[in-house]
Image (cartoon, rainbow, N blue to C red):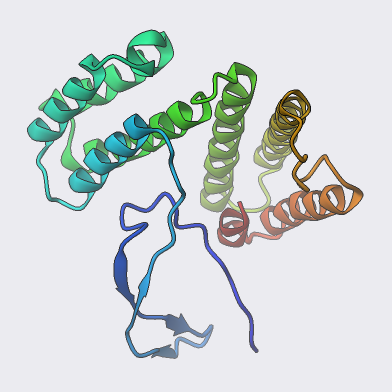
Length: 239
């Protein structure tokens, strides 16, 4: 069987760097095989905001063990004190303060601090980038989409733990998928409004074309099918 998958690794701390990877495959019977190591450039999302890029640089150093918690917190405090969007937007300021407090708290175990800080700093960088052009509606819609995606992922993990026959968990997953659909619809509308204001082309994305709507509907149905049949791992990958 031949196939291809393109995982989104833009959030990975190694994104944008030269990496060496090995493909490892395991069959249902337990047989294992792996490819020869290959070195390649890991793709990364482009950020135009200097502040977002600076936050991601701090995030990368911390995630890769190049900087300890105290130094990371100090670097973030410096970025937060600089004039710019963080000081002008209370939500961003509180998010950054929460990360710094987590890193400074000696009761927070290392793994929780690492995962929590890297996740929150990624969301903060995205929020800064989204608000770069002053489009509050689009930025808020992006936050809603990410929150809905996280809620769906959390429910899929719960389904995996409780078993595919948990009807209450399935019903909750359907509700969260509907919330995700609505959040994506608001994001697409915000992009459409911005395109009309700026006289630019509207992207061919779900909600803007019949083909996009069909593809998005197929994805949602496949997520539900995977979860219903006990394939929560596959559903998480699709998400």
